Image 1 (spheres, rainbow, N blue to C red):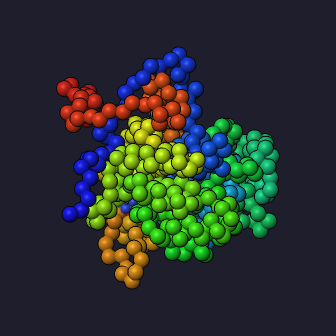
Image 2 (image 1 turned 90 degrees about the vertical axis):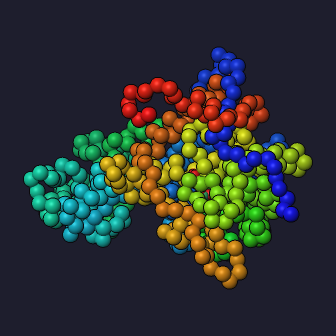
Image 3 (image 1 turned 45 degrees about the horizontal axis):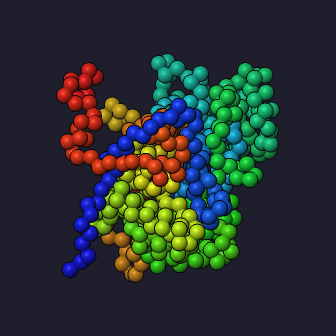
Length: 498
Ligand code: RVP
């Protein structure tokens, strides 16, 4: 008979945090959310410390260069998705590394032959109000003009009118040459009363925009996660198949940390991949591994040399691995088990290997619970997919704005390497779904609120750091009836939702 674990496999919603003594010094601004991303020896400091405990999921529908820049500016980190060509992934990593605050790559672009109807559709989809007009309709084509809402009146004009007939042409635009500093660009904006300044290279190709509205915001990123050369920090997902080609290209591009992306990381394939990276770069390239759900899985990857270990199988919002393969474990139970193993390993070896809780965060308080259960940081997909900065389309469905969000195991992503078990058999079934998530606006606005809630909970517990949360918080299991007690109940809520 199989070895039956009688302990029930639980998830976050089955727990609550007990308040502790709140001292007068326990104010939100005194809470420190810094946390190690990679392993370190007792008494030493990790090579990378996150300023907030969040990383974005290694997914096509979540982590491109746009989201990576937005998240690093707030103190977290993205792992650029690996289910794309090596060239595509390298380009995204380079975009993050060469990002200059205030210089924004144009994300809404058309050609002069497009129509007003195309402009309106693009604005609805991307919510960007400035459209670059380039010869090939890309963000780096030759700049021919610009369109803002001042260039057309929907009520007066035909939807078939060509862009070239109503855009502001290049001859009427003030532009600046690549190489200009942000201060100089802002001076030009003020001098000419512009809303934006296109920056072009010596061949007239569009490089960036500098926006007037960003003037204050880009001065104000106290948590920004940057490297020694003041460039933003970025990670990349890799697989256990093409690493001998992919890893050198990513390292050359300046990636700061790698993570093997797999739904089941307790494998010899991962051990081989870690060994390759550690040997080739003399231990100087950082690499996380996973995912695992128990102490055996953790210890295997720890001993294989992983710089951090990711925890979670089947708990992602778009994931159907548990239904398809019957493997997985409730995220809370998995995390608690792995955190114990991590702590014991630290005592025995003197090496602290951070763990990342991956997937299944639904409510903001789940974040505080996951950290209290021992996670050093969290990976989230659904959470980030909802924002303007994620790479997917924004659509109007059933009267509500939504963003697309699909799993790496879905037919849409075709990321077979993530689910490949080796051998000759190709993937025969899906482990993820294609879905929508409610559109939620800007990353920064949402993150500020989420962090505000986490800090507030920590103050209620009299706790001011993640380490203290892990050692001092008191958690309790909740019954299904007490979950009902926790929401509004036995009243008629006025907004009519209940
Ligand atoms: P969530 O934050 O709950 O949306 O979960 C995101 C996580 O789900 C990812 O980091 C990954 O581990 C997992 N995932 C991604 N694709 C799939 C799938 O198609 N099954 N699962």
